[in-house]
Length: 356
Image (cartoon, rainbow, N blue to C red):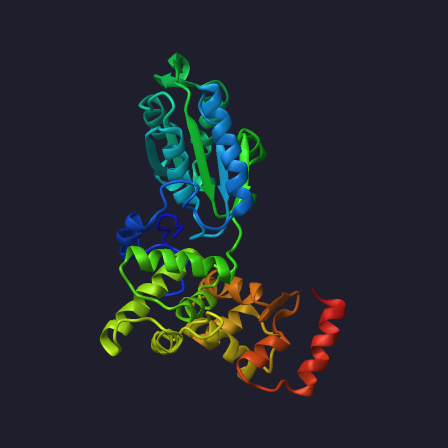
């Protein structure tokens, strides 16, 4: 139910990828919650943001600038739209990669209306000249437009109407401190618990006119990797299976059978995830093994393994990154139903002592 805009990553091609593809974008517009009361999950963020918006409305002022960080698919874009709706203001949407020059940002800022919300996705990817212009715009609601070149160049100050900037980033550590400090409210979006995802799935099923049983929603939620966008994508695929192979009602058995067809296992691992684990366990005895060697073994690019597969495997406690290389954990052996060799188990003990 809570989603963000498309990013061009290999994950966008996966059923369990957190980035939005075109089908996601088409469906998400109808499923997005319209206010904070409808928004499921992120309880602390919702409570804090509600206070910020209520106080701004009571003062008759624009809301403070807001920075939202967290993994893709957790609701940053949705919250930006809710902020605009709660403040009764229009919203302008753009992204960091689209702003390559300071002039690009100046054109956007100069056309804003008073109180308008400017949503800047992937703000950490904005060019440095535009970033420096944004400092003054956020703090003083003013920008200096440079006219001419060389010694004859002149800076013309341009006053801006008060506006609210909502910045979203998946990599908050890349934001320079001067930019981060200019946000009045910052929030980090956490991964969802299965019970929260069940509520997301039930709400989406209702909007999509899909009949789903409680255990069916629980089965989908458990494979959704803590991400609402993935939960909604899996729901649509299970819906298709239920309509073709059953009576259209999603039960636990139907959900399990459908996701087995799409190669999403009980913990949310897909073909790529299992391929990495199987290579690590079967070919290299559980590691340690270098990233490049592991990538060659699974027939993928090094960046795909490191940026697409590994983060979830590490978060699930199935794989560890150590100075000597990638190492499988006991949970990885158990998940694939394999028994670790004694030498590997002893090696893990040494690695825990001297490695990570």
